[in-house]
Image 1: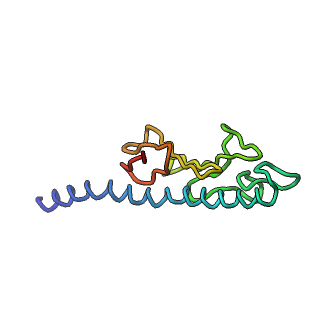
Image 2: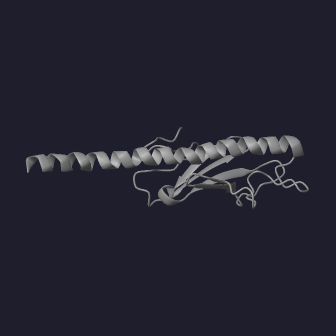
Image 3: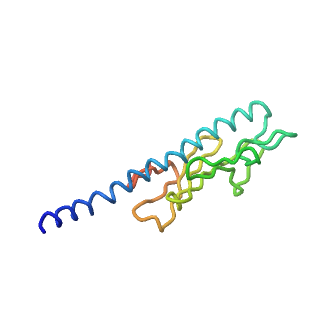
Length: 140
């Protein structure tokens, strides 16, 4: 009986840590996807001198029938507020499934931010960085 109690205590401590570990691995999909899309947006700008649709050329952040912009559990897109202009944009990665409640942002200047739904216990957002770890401090 003592052995069962000890195993139960150890499991109750290990399970939340393991869940955080797995979640942190899934959050990287969103940040990596945004980094890649930001590079694609800059290449698009170099070719077209605008972040907006130019003729038949569609910006990388716009989903099409051949490009869904889904990476892992995140859907990548341009934000509508603020909307992209010819010289500015803000990209977002919105989590789903196990990453529901997490949204990462980056703009044309490389400014990163994170919003985290209040239903996600123990995590807080940051307007200056991507939060990828529970309890991570927002830089000053």
